[in-house]
Length: 238
Image (tube, rainbow, N blue to C red; front, side, top):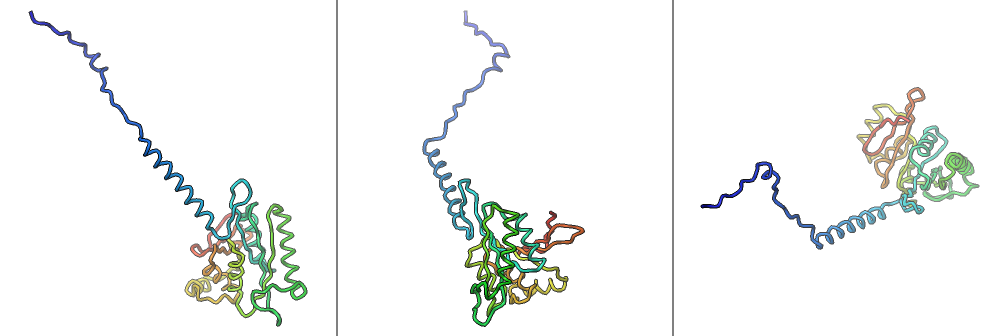
């Protein structure tokens, strides 16, 4: 008499599952992944250390920038200074107030005149520095007064910015007609940087660092118009 096998119920068959063995990553792959992470971190540190006008400040690892603002007695320059203090300058940054004065017979371009030769210039920059210290007492502030000399104002500003190794250059900009702005766009970096309007355009087009032109939009609307090398009259409502 033959042996009769026992037939399993259907619900038992449904519970049978094949066992799949998953291998964990090899030790070599773990070592390679760790080395890649270390390499990426080193590349990031090298990239940050190569930024001009930036340095580590304090134990919190924040980047300290040197920001230069071109100042004079105009409303546009004061507006640019107020914008920088409220929108750009951080507590770890260093602020440089630059004023370019007309030359005297004994001074060359780029030289710093004495207080006796340019008393009004020093009085202006120190009054603006006092205003900045009242508004942002935690920020380190320096002043610089240079002579325009034989060079035009635009090249004088950029030369001082290179010497100071600034990360950001801020200038006040006057309101111009559409025709004038189209002419400046066509001229590009061929503008010499002598007139008050062409100085701003010259600095934006030729600065080795980031250059920003700031203009108040209007008292009724509010905000600022920001111009950079790639962006014209960007409206910042603030």
